Amino acid sequence: MSGNSCDKVQVRQVRKIGPTRRSVSGSYQFRGKEAIQYESTLERDFLIRHEFFPNIVSITPQPAEIPFIGDNGRPYTYTPDFLMSLRHLNGEATQHVLVEVKPRDLWVENWRAWSSKWKAARRFARNQGWLFKIYDESRIRDRALENIKFLDRYQRFAQAPGHTDTLLHALYQIGPLSRDALFAHCGVIAGDERPWAVAIWYLLAMRKIDCDITQQLDGETVLWTLQNG
Image 1: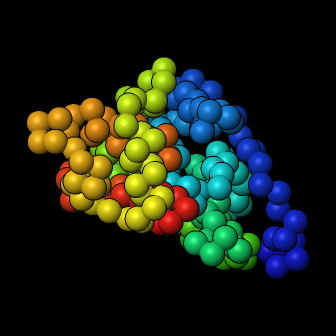
Image 2: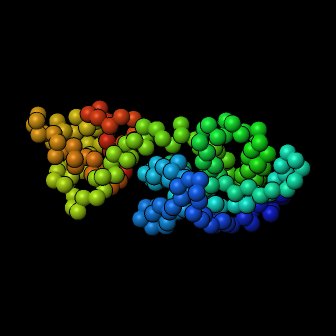
């Protein structure tokens, strides 16, 4: 496929996902807007995990049909699970990643049989200026996902808990602080930490403040506003 023809590829869902007996399928309301279809709980968790990160611009399911020749010499078509678009930190460029979500035991068992289609996907992505990556449990069901699922319950509050304005103002004024240092700055008394902690989890869940979500959430967690991070 030539570079010119690759430039004409339009990012859109090329295959609809229907009910399946072999796995759990459904749709996930990504950031409360577009419903993204998935075919397994691992794909669903991929969406939940990546929804949290502000540099993820969009995720398109079933984004392209890629022709390839199998080991038996016959032509086939391969459709990756997602196309993920990421904004670089400087905000000036966007990177695209073709994503295959596959349980580790399956791709380890079948990597020889699947290598032809994955090689075709890498060539296709390279011609587009994209990347191709395979995501298994080790890249999805990690500490970050645990933290994100823990914070999810705090999105359901009917209204913001107390102390959120005080915490936000302190982070705006001072900049990044550990949770314990922030509590000390706000004069939180020992034994009265719980309502303040709830306010922290709410602000993180609502993306009012940020932290390194890949690390354990505790008193040493460094917090910052999106403006001064």
